[in-house]
Structure formats: C-alpha cells, structure tokens
Length: 251
Ligand code: URA
Image (tube, rainbow, N blue to C red; front, side, top):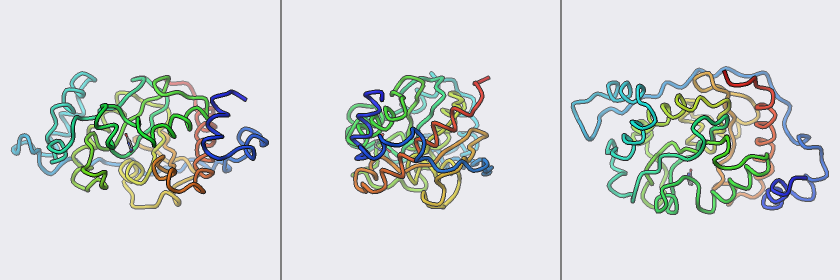
C-alpha cells in the first residue's frame, strides 16, 4: 500500500480493518447517475458596493470573467458584510485545470489568517483523505469554498451571504471545468444542488452540477467531531475515485 494512503487510513481510524479489504470493496454499489437539475445560482439581491447594480447584472458580469478578473473581484468584494469582519478573502487553491474540484463551506480562523482554504485541523484531515485516494492538494486538485470570507466565530453562512458569494464559485467551476466535484458538507451540497436535502440522503450516487458529476460527502470538520461517520466518508471517497476512473478524458 502506498504510504500516503496508509497514513490516511490510520488517521481515519480505519486500519487495520480497511487495509484487509479490497481497495474499493467498501464503496457503495454505483447507482445510475441521477440527473439533478443544475443549480441556478441566484445572485445577490443587491450589490453592497454598487447598490444600483442588480444581482443579475453582477452575476452576468462575474460569469464573463477570466481568472485574473475573478481573483480581483473576490479580493475587492464587499457584496455582503463579511468582508468587514474577516482578515482577508480566501479565493481557492490548486490546479486551475484540475480534474478534481473539492468544495467546502467557508474559511475558518486559520484560513482567514493564511488566505488559503483548509489549512487548519479540518484541512489536515482533508489532506489525509486526499492521500487516501492517491491525490494531493494542488496536483490535479482544486479546493474552494462556498464563501470566500470567514463568518465571525465560524458561524454558519447566512442565506444572503451564500447567494452573493455563489456566482464567484460558479465562475470558478466554469473556468476549471473539473471532471468531478466533491461537495463536502451541507452548505456545499445544498448550494451546488439547490436542495435542502440532508447529506445522508444525497450520499452514494452521482449528482450533476452544471453537467459536472458531483459526489456528496461529509465536511472534514464534521468528521473531526463525529468519528463514526469517517467510515462513510471513506466510502464516499472510494466511490468518487471509482466514478472518476469511469469518466472519459477531459475534452
Ligand atoms: N472549513 C471549510 O469549509 N473551508 C475551509 O477552508 C476551512 C474549513
């Protein structure tokens, strides 16, 4: 077994049980891909920086941006109140042409301080999870969040914040054109799939976001607090890896 993979299994508390099994034996049987209507990302009801700019105008403007413009837009964004309380925006990190796009919720304290997603405790677990499926941050992997600014005290994102920030994530998806999205946690799943359904009910099948296969799993921070669900996350990762293997090459 590859040492990074072994390390991940150990971190996940899944050894020796999982080591004894076939690589993907724990993955759920793949169901026929289920088409979920692509989320139509509702844009902000008002642009705080320019109140005269409608949400549609703003979303349309963002939808035409290249990487440089999008990064500048995020850095200068004041579309919701979060920029007033965070240290800096956290755009996303990784290979801009990655096959894998991982989407989390919002920066926490460490991410806010360092300007990079998933660099705290949850990030350590995420790196271990990636190693478990022979992936590495930055190598054919891009990591982004639904929100680009840290909510104070790590509170849950508010609906209006998600609405205003999601055109930025949508543009990241369009620019990356990933082959597979792994949506981690309730906010990523519910935002990308435009649903209120629980993670438990969404796991184990292939959804679609703007035509891109999307697989749902638990958020790494949740897994730190809910150890029994790590085994389910491992199933999800095996399923994601197998789904990626079944996909054709990027055009
Ligand atoms: N949790 C997230 O959802 N994103 C981060 O970047 C860090 C923690």
